[in-house]
Length: 518
Ligand SMILES: Cc1ncc(COP(=O)(O)O)c(C=O)c1O
Image (tube, rainbow, N blue to C red; front, side):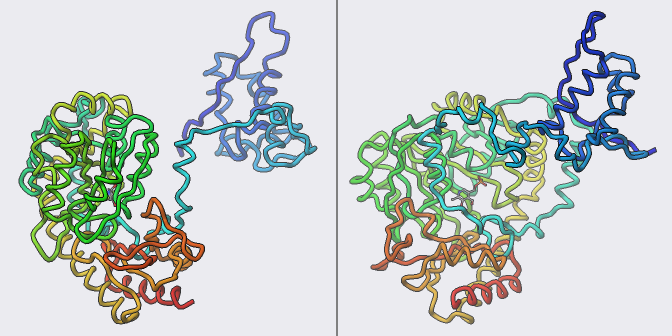
């Protein structure tokens, strides 16, 4: 016999005493009728069998069956042989009194219940309002060509991964299913520390690694621990919009500091960032423009932080993918004063939905970060932490990165070639030596948000460069941006190439051409 899943039911309060004034069947009938007309139970929703409901309520089956029969007769419920009883898919309009449901759908008498008429103005926090300043980003809902931050998911070694998941998921130990350390699974922290010391030149021990649910949580926790509401935090301009959001969510004031070919301009930082509590940078691969912070700038930045007592938040999000030259070591490795909070992620080297990242926390801040994590969401899924540990220790991780580096190099070349072949010199390509995206600067006067919206309608995900600016200067009625190292203002598109094959990339560029010519 087919097993029918047990449905959920809101709690039912019954007066079952011997002196109850309303008979049981009527109480049940009233309860279901109200739940249906007020929208607590929705059309098509399953009800438990009369036997199981009677058992749960510890009453005889007869009143339950009588209530169901009455509700079926009045059209509130429907029964199907073998499929049990459900809320009717269409409830007759005259069965609905002037309740919340009619008020919500705007049908019925048109008079709102008193409670809605009297409601005082509702207010959200200033930081809540600030978070909604970014335009609706329709391009991010598309998994088509050029979606930023999308790795080559079809090249992920799923076979190996699912074997490792099955190794632990089939017969999980108690340690996997219970509560665990807020800092993360120790063996994973050891594996991450070894990787960072060896490959990224980060100075760290496993006890400093906090496993997060991705860089975004790394940013949120850093903001919570380091910043008070109203504190100033400097960010790169243009920069990573989600970092700005994390700082705004913590009530901080975001101060944009321009970048040039050497990364964040520290002279501007010293001028604009007076009194700043922290600065956020992407020194290995500036997001979105792609330059590497020069050695001189790194030293100047560290000196500035030491002099002012500010924290440096280093986001090292995709440095595994450097094509022409050796990987650039992390800024954290040069820091002798424990001023750098180093944030990394497995979103790009594994897959984003894994939601695993890490923070390298200065040793004296470990208790504060651990407490903040505990207060936020306690800890990350242990199963995935353990599986990832084996994935790294058994060599699959290093192999996957090596393969993806080759693949992304080919895909980047395919994109640059397609742009050149189809668009000539009309688009200027910026930052194509590393990572998983590049930027094309649009002809002067082009509204990049409008272009992105039009491209999204054709299934192309091309993020507008202007959303990376905290202060898009208004020129000609739309936000526009300065070209790197050029005078004047240009809009642009951020094009991810990692997640699409050369053929899809080529087709995507043709569609972009149509959009730009339209
Ligand atoms: C600058 C930057 N940092 C971090 C991330 C990764 O974020 P997460 O680890 O939260 O997926 C991205 C992804 O787009 C990014 O562009």
